[in-house]
Length: 477
Image (cartoon, rainbow, N blue to C red; front, side, top):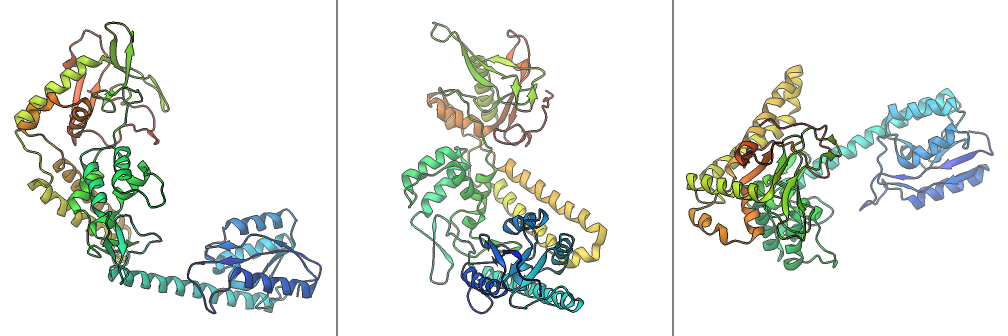
């Protein structure tokens, strides 16, 4: 038994709070009472901390416990007291490492339930045995939870804290479409048509207001668009049930919405035709619309590189007359669309063929990644085989993206000029990934300075606002 009069830090931990009860669950209040009674009976002084809630004992790195360790290292504490040894740790290796550090600092560990005395070899051996069983119990709980999760997914149960918008939970806990389901499907179709997430958020505010009275945000829309639950899937980890509940959108609709490019909106107050699409060849960043001589009879309107970006300075900043570029791009677009003479179809033959191919490639990758037998048999060749399947997914995704490219009908081309600017801008951005402009003389022909990258031709790593774009790189025309 440790000597009396110690200054001990009381440590209370619960792995999972929600829904637990019974003999395996010791609430924070019960743990605190046990520690308090033991300390009073032995004349120790306690320093209390907030309970460590929803934190596993499988790791020794925990926020509250880290604070206690710092107190031990600085000599502010004589040790740690817990209600039960498995509250201290459920991992043998991690616990032994911490106890070795305790010994170096002259600190002690006291476990009330086991009444451990670590000053004797027998006490230390007994503690190791208890830790082994604590680790075994943690593994058993994890295995049971994994089995229960897999079984629930197989039954079609969506395992999540919150029910996704657009669904209600039925009597069997499976998801069923709610009255908001049509609004969610409209959000997917709007994103597939290249509407921005902010535009979709405003639309959802109109047709599916949030029950808490708040407003929809772009990030909230993004979470909806990326959630595979709307295709009818229930999933958690490697467990996937593709037919768990009624889908709100088809696989093709989900893919098309998620493959829609994220457009960089211009920062000016007035709309412009190619804002967010036209880019500088010197740095690949978006050109900013600017007006020189505003208020004069004939102001000069240009798209101009800002020159200095978060990643560095552009080596060859480009600038081009806005009206000349707008007219050129629209003329080329009309010619391109007329020559193809295709009609816009959400589910074209190519799309219907590409979507199942991507789904099969993703399923193959998912199954192979979780196949422990293949990993063991292939050994060092496993990662190469995994990379081949990942490459097949990338190829199938590229084919689907190409198949999803929107093209206009002859009727749409004829009525294009009568459309408002915002609608023309949306149509162009749905057909074009980027318009690259290189630096040149103001009087040089536009076609000598400009390259149009049609849908699916633009690189995936073009600089975007709000992410790490790496160093400045040029685009070779």
